[in-house]
Length: 342
Image (cartoon, rainbow, N blue to C red; front, side, top):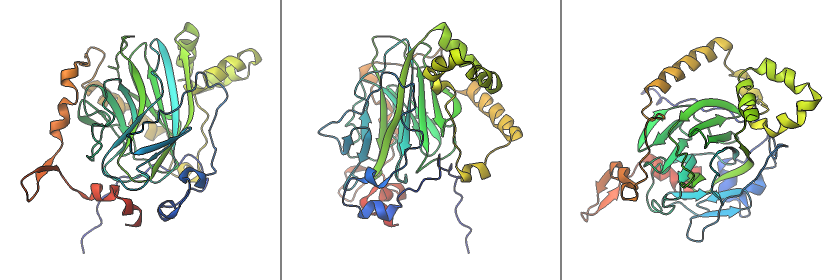
């Protein structure tokens, strides 16, 4: 008997609230987000300048308030949804999303992109859309990050019940992701700081009936005060002392995203890393960071002629008629309507 294929461990959810299984999602005739009553971590006091997702008539995604339902009937490609307004330059932006349904298929990604991103580019192709070119940056549910068509290991695989946070410092061009409110480290340092370049929050999915909810979003101007609390957020004990001072309580509330309140589920507590493991992982990430191709000295090409220049890297196959089609795989089969029943 052959041994079972190796599968990467999936990060536990943020809390212990119940979530619908795949069969319940597939058979539900109403609004899928209504199946979830969990509100853990939502609407943290201190959110400033909140925004919502932008609905598009030609998109295979339904946007209702803060929820996105990708491919509500069946999936035939990749849908990309962006925020309703650009993230202002010279500010630090943070937003957080909850994964409502189990993730499967080719890819589900969270990240950012410029206004040059064609949201319908891969409408009929199953691809990891965010980070395909120089115009976007993405974090996949597989735990990898992608930019300019190159994928790099970054975090642990995640799925239903997890919180995905995105921190964008537009004054420095730094992009960092959070998983269940734990910072994973700066992923990229080459995000354009040019105020003439509009950058939007983005999410993409190939999975049928996959649901993502925006639960928190805030933006703060870059000040000496913010940078000070940013440095203190790396020292939890000192930050805890400041939180006891009445005069600083309201200020710290505005910067809650620098050290977001963590609520571990019982499953995550059982598998939580000790300090020794954290130190090993931190040093490994540091070594990886030094090897990363995309640094501050790199200039992200914003030439429109280079848009989606890496799309040719997507594997192709030939059909019996001689036409080129995108390669089929088990992942693509999982993107179809009945992937929940596999």
